[in-house]
Length: 225
Image (cartoon, rainbow, N blue to C red; front, side):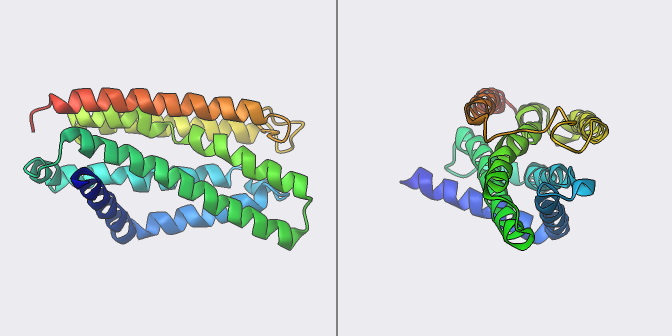
């Protein structure tokens, strides 16, 4: 019971921080998500907007680790009756919960766009389902950054973050150059016929998050603050 209260408190702390300190990033992420939801329903010039929205969203949520370190809050938190495992677990819950919220928001926007542009129901459902692997795939960044941050601190881990940003930008450019239609673009996901593939992909991503969490718990429990 006490652990649940502390977990809730940590989640609320991160939520309020992101809401107050990263409002601009959230607005940008929302604008790109809106554009992408419309783009995936026919306006191909903005077909990768959702990917940029996910990127800004991930940066906003990962910034909680930066805040904890720069303000020395993680040291202060270590004096509370909160285990380091709970502290690490909360960060992963926050990221996964953020992914779910982002997918729900994208799905709502897709439905609204479907009504506005009168797109077929099958295409709308395909877009909603295909957003699942896209969001989780683009959010692989925390799986790598979190263990490095918990081990070495954000200042050293940000080098890996810069590398991942470069990889992310290259991936987006590759998708842009691959074509815009489903027939031309090998990265397009036809989820209506590949729901099992989507489920497998989500399972793999959850496994990666679990492995990343295990590593983070192990390295952070031994770290000297």
